[in-house]
Length: 96
Image (tube, rainbow, N blue to C red; front, side):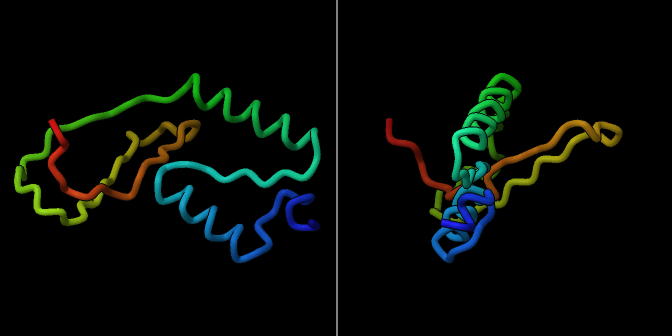
């Protein structure tokens, strides 16, 4: 599989997987050899050790099932950091 071996998105299914990963705050890795796979796991391991969980209580308590956009920004001057989040959430009431 030439695209996978090069670590690139090559097929429509690859693009769909990458899109789903990005929309949910993740990353899709495409590897075709053991060295690339090892590098991918190293990157995942580093990210897991450096992540934060941010929560909030929305002012709008109307759980109507609508989509609500999320936007998280860093204070300027932190070029070494990157924010990766979901694009939003569906406003539904959690089950008790």
